Image (tube, rainbow over all chains, first blue to last red; front, side):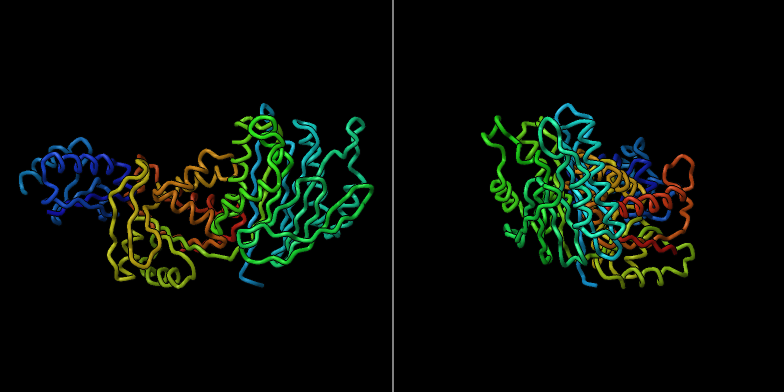
Amino acid sequence: MKVTVCIGSSCHLKGSRQIVERLQALVAENDLKDKVELSGKFCMGNCQNGVCVTVDDELFSVSPDTVDDFFKTNIFAKV
Amino acid sequence: MNNLCTDIGYQSVNKFGEQLCGDRVEMIEQGGDNYVVVLADGLGSGVKANILSTLTSKIISTMMANGMSLENCVETIAATLPICEVRKVAYSTFTIVRTIDNREAEIIQYDNPQLIMLRDGKNYDYPKTAMEIGGKMIYKSKVDLRENDYLVFTSDGAIWAGVGTSMNFGWERDQIIAFLEKMYNPDFTAKTMSALLLDECCRLYGGKPGDDTTVCTVKIRERRSVNLMLGPPRDPKDVNKMMSLFFAKEGKHIVCGGTTSTLAGEFLGKPVETLLDYLDPEIPPIAKIEGVDLVTEGVITLSRVLEQAKSYHDADAIYADWNVKQDGASLISRMLFEEATDINFFVGRAINPAHQNPNLPINFNIKMHLVEELSELLKLMGKRVKVSYF
């Protein structure tokens, strides 16, 4: 599974770093390093709804507050 | 015209406890590739020394700028500078370096520590002629310059470093030469070389300089261009034109901005690989595109570069910072401030709708303003800057 977090200017200001760091921690905690590939991308062309995160090409809008729920429903449940 | 340029950089520290520096460096560009640098050291310290050295360096540089011969200037200064009643010495000592077309230097020295010349990293003994002008012994030299020649000259604060504390007789010329030879790296800019030597002086002084200390370096280096692109063009039809012009330029290429790097990747037919390493929590990670030397986020990164450019001429705190860090902004700063002599900005004027949100500190005007302000600061560093808008 490939999870990509937008780290462009808009998303960066809306909290990309917190999301990246939280996802990295969650992936490690749940022993998913072999199954989930985390990566970054500059701008996904959907800045208004940042922070943009894609899971295997499906686009989500995540904020630092919702990152834990997002992980549970869209990453952990689907692996 | 040759492919060389003259890089001049200096740095000073004040005598411990003093607000003003008694040393003064004045630089004048005489059109083309001719420069005059004057380092004057006023007798004593504090206000008096500051006024005297300012007077000396200003008189010399202004006269030179108006086309008077070096001899004439020195004569005027030597005749004008009063001899101190108590100490029986002149009020201000000076070193003048004049470079002509990056090929030749005239060096005039009056009572400052003898200028050190490094060629290929080794001390180079240049000829000196002594002459007496107005009762003062002045040493004059004429040397041919080559690429990577460094001329390092200081006020006497440098050779007094450590007297009575870490060394008995201060830091002698031979020891300074040994230090410079040891530290030598042809990639060092004039500013870096000066900062290194000055740092060592401060260390020998135990952090409390006993005299104003100034180090000035003149370096002959190859011209090198760095090109930086920021933002997509206002008219999407111009993307190819902007990219072709940008990548046709000689030198290194920096691409800033998310959309811009995506477009650059498409143009080059290469993927944009974004890294996820936050080397600085405030600066977004960098990316990689084959064929581009550096890819970063846009406005946030460049705002940091601007901050670092503003602090370039001040003392050391942030200077040291960008010199070693690996985040996108520090990497750009190093390429622009150190490597580049010629900088071409390619600025796209497309408006990113997502940035026009009043809650975000990155709107269109800020972007335009950033480039303007940065260009001005780079010009102050002696860079040739060209900005093209698309």
